[in-house]
Image (cartoon, rainbow, N blue to C red; front, side, top):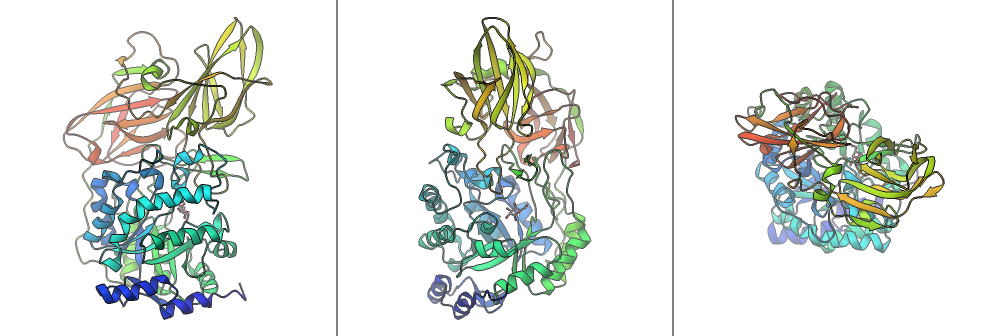
Length: 618
Ligand code: GLA
């Protein structure tokens, strides 16, 4: 990195000039006595006093809002002084123009709650956030036109992001430390250098934040490689790095890139996430704590990613795409992350080791540690009613006619499954049915008979179909994983975005049914095994009675792949390929007495549904 110096920025910040930040802060300091978080030489100042950020990440969108305070208190008990969170645009605005900041989506209340428990807050508003979250936090309606340029200064994209900032930022700016609130700093984009080098885009986002009243410290966070640092930073914005393991080299890379200024690891990966069908990731608690210790000894600030991971409830899990092996890798429902505070609030061994490491460098609260929230006692129930999904299409959706089998975003559907059916003229001899542009798996039915599943990861696969009579019916039910959240293949529309071929012939004339499955109240259940057999995926209904609401874990031994709703709330996906074996069902979702569990099993319903008192993540 010889020869690359950014003295301009650092000198300016030290003088308190570059930065509109520091300039504005000075004015504010005179007005309110508060300058918020600023930079002096190699250190941070908070309202003029030396301050070191010892933070941990928690995503308000991954933890039930009734548990926010509990988890934040656990973070404080760990010895953290701040919480970092992303803002997931799609969580607020899954449908264009209908931004929602109520209830679970009240990000301002999350920031305030953190302030109430004594934590400072760092917000990473994206608009792209990565985070193993569907489409990296971008809303699915951006994919109506799948060629929309993403994460760059093309106005077609930027204009939409600025409109989002118009909605979001006014809710956050009153909470800034410069106004007496807990919000210390905001991030510009996310690891931008891993994706592109459009400095104009970063500049636009930065200016948009400033113009909308953000007068706090801004930073860019990137991986520590040269190209990442160079493509993902701005000259007058603090650079920070993200990494796992020994901090020596990454901090050195940051120091070479930015010769002066506080060192801050904005994502220290203390664990990792899992894909379906792969091994569960864990990291060694002692080693991890050792790296935190080393980082603090080096005088650096740190944000643990994650302090408490939480859950990818609903359809929110993202996915990766391994371009080397041409492999789509959907992320599991749990986002436990092997973080120090577990998905259900557990204070893990890693919690204790990291707390000891922090205690060597900063005071940790001298209070009894929070106890584990109560757990449900184990029990097994059997579903008592079922109804087939294909028989329920009329109560779940209204058909739309389309010449081509387009992707769900084209039909205005944000999340869910999608069903396509057509008629094929016969008689005709058997030919291979294949799909191009499939995301992610299509269950194929010919005249109501299940023939098999086509999978995005085996794109050359076909299923033979013959039409013996004058006409045959073809049904395709597309099952979806999360949208890709990282890398160049970010545009990942769901359903069928290209064509269905029978032999060499493209099939046209489709009846398309969007299945967001957000209202299941119309399902007409019948007694289980009460006559007639359902073809294909089946909804199963069970009742689970509990004496008092408490945390539980649902397991589906003998079941294959599907979705689970608890009292109408979609907990997420299960799949027997593992590694995850249980789904976290947080206490606030349960009711005293009877609770309704609905399972949509795509293939093979098992016998019982188990409530367990311990998680099994594989
Ligand atoms: C990067 C991203 C995060 C997350 C982690 C991996 O650092 O910035 O959003 O995806 O990788 O968990």
